[in-house]
Image 1 (cartoon, rainbow over the protein chains, first blue to last red):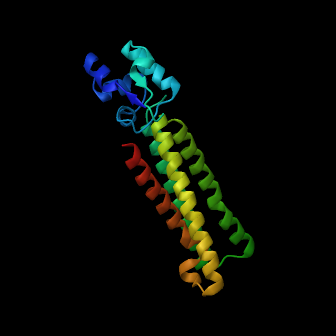
Image 2: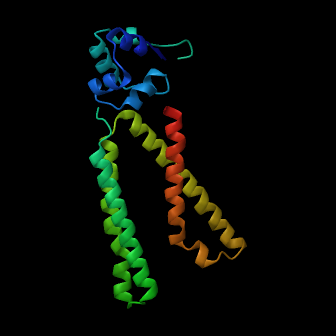
Image 3: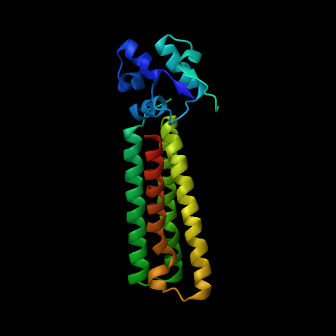
Length: 66
Length: 130
């Protein structure tokens, strides 16, 4: 699965730490998700989408192998 | 979702130290003072209480972590369990082939290995997600 978290963060001028604080996780968690090493839960994905003001399907997309 | 809670971490560390100290004291008393059987049995089970407190705080600490850290802890524990099982199995078989010195391979000598396996699991699991 790929994501556009970095792009969305850049739009808001947020660091990983800023986003982490807003959604209630550690900075390392945000980094893991952003780099594709960890697939977030539905709740966390929706929280991110709400923070960015973007639909969740625009932030997370399935890849061919998924 | 919650961040890693440092006060939970402190509690876990403190209760771990408490268990370790209780265990060492009981071990020393049992080994050096040769108490009677009743006292010996009580001392043998006393660390169970402090260990239970430690494990309770550990589990509570893990449940307060965010989902990435929970996954890391789960994988670390799974790796540690697998390695511990492998070691016990190997020692069990070795015991039938060669005489393992009780001074080096008694049950209590295995404890540091179990903790080492957990930290090894933690190291590899953290590397995977960070």
